[in-house]
Amino acid sequence: MARRKVKLQYIVNKSSRRNTFRKRKEGLLKKVYEITTLCDIKAAAIIYSPFDVEQEVFPSHPEVHEMLMRFQDMSEKDKTKNMVN
Image (cartoon, rainbow, N blue to C red; front, side, top):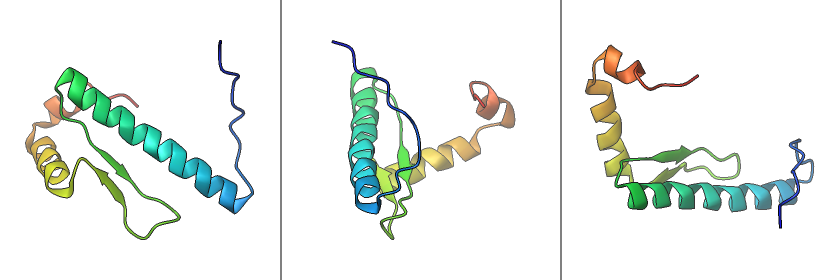
């Protein structure tokens, strides 16, 4: 059974918007966890929320910091090799 297409538009109701954000954030973090586990790769997610003061970082601050430092140390050619707009 196929899911119906979701109309993408701003959610006016604040509590509904917050609830939708929470569910989608959990789904996104689950996907990042799954791809890192199944494919044995390094992946990170940094999520800034309009509802929370602190940003959500996955997997953890030290691991993400190490990944970002490694990326910054790469040559410009290597950085942009597989980037997509």
